[in-house]
Image (cartoon, rainbow, N blue to C red; front, side, top):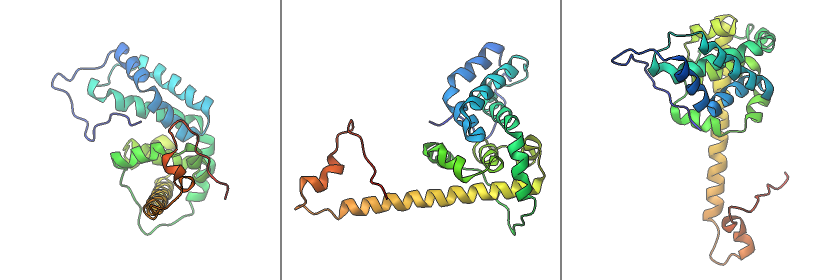
Length: 219
């Protein structure tokens, strides 16, 4: 799952505004991606669903969105509503970041490939490892490429807290991606080390049919 998104938003030649029907269509066609955005931020299925509904209702009263920006507008609108629904948790988390000091703050956003990799992760891991402020900063700045300054306005927290939270989120992403790469390499090495004399039992995980469940051994 990856949502269509341009790196630079330019006006179309006719600079046409999207009408109400087109805006609702954008929400319907992107529902899966919008749900992922809202759930990543709120960590609550009901709040995620409500975020999409409320963001779509905002579209009915907004007639100043360029057609070429429509998909991105829907994504950011959904994220904004999701942030509002967990504002209390964000405010509580901010107390931690206000005391942190970093020698260097990261402001780079995620690449399209990194966003795709992030979407492939189990959101439970994201919810367990990151608080609401860090998750929101990661989605807004990292995935949707909202400016850091705008993030402070959406999140309603000081700039220093946003930067510290985003640092934490990006470090988490780097560590998680590195761990996944390591596990993938270990699996590849284990596969390469199998000899031709291996029994069918040894090779079973490699030849397991796609419809057979893969049971992960308990650690």
